[in-house]
Length: 79
Image (cartoon, rainbow, N blue to C red; front, top):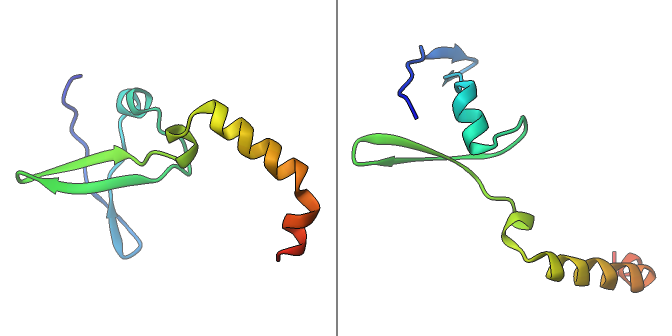
């Protein structure tokens, strides 16, 4: 991927930088996603924060959904 340059802008009390579309597409970033920022070897590293559901097996998620549906009334009474 080619390097791109962006100008830093003021956003309220913070600073902001627009993310180039090519990088948004490459990282599959969508509005509302969380990004992780880290300084490594004098460079800013930005990663898309993995969502919990992206880290779980589909079969496990299916089992959780079935359990939630099967015991829905019990879970509601626990509130």
